[in-house]
Image (tube, rainbow, N blue to C red; front, side, top):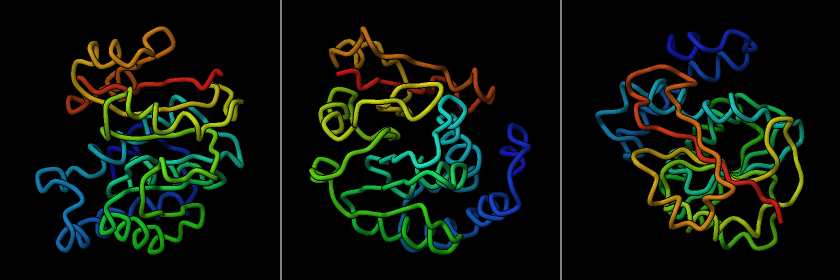
Length: 212
C-alpha cells in the first residue's frame, strides 16, 4: 500500500480503506481461483493497482462517465479505477466466469456500488454505449479497436482526452501499432515516466480516440 501513497496523497478515508482491503481479498481468492500470477501476488499494489492507476493520471473521468473494462480478468484496471473514480460507472467484462465471480465478490466486499461485472464478451454488448474503454494486455490493438469502437460514443467526458480506448500494454509495440492501421491517431505514454519504478520498464499506456 505504501507504493500507492508514494504517488497519491489525497484519497478520502473510504478510498483508503477500499485500497487497503484489496491485498487480503485477492490473496484469499487467489488460493481458490488463480486470477493473479503467484509471483505477482506479493506485489499486488505495485504491479496491478498502481499500474492500473496510470490511466487515472492521464485521464480524469468526469462524474457520470461510463467506462467498460475489456477482458478485466481479476478486475484490472477496472477495480482500482472504480475506487479512484467513485462517481464514474464501470462495467467489467470477461469471458471467463470464475474470474468475473472474483471481480463481483471483491467489489461487494469493499462496497463498490459503481461496478457491474458481466460474464461475456464485449462484442456481445450490442445495446450498450460507453464513453471510454480500458483494458490491460488483452489482445492486439487492432482486435481491441475492432471489438470496442462501435460501443464508444463520440464526445469528450474528460478534460484531458476525447472518448476512446485507453489500454495498458508492454514490450516493443512498434509492429503492433503499425499493423493496427491506427498509427496516425495513436498516442503512447511510458508508464515509467508517470511512476518511475523499475517494474514498469517497457510498460505503456496506449490511447486511441473515437473521432468518427
